[in-house]
Image (tube, rainbow, N blue to C red; front, side, top):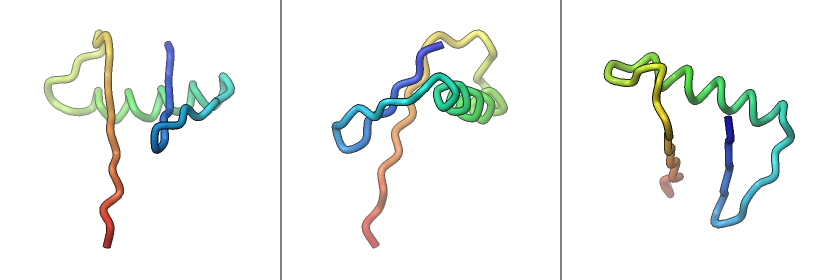
Length: 52
């Protein structure tokens, strides 16, 4: 599995352990939702901080 992190347009390098943790957390949360099965092919998550 390939995990990529980009923050403010800058790619953030991650070692294999960090990639595995990110993959397990994000896919685990998504797969727990109705409509997302375990055989998905590509997942995109965007997080934007609200000013406040």
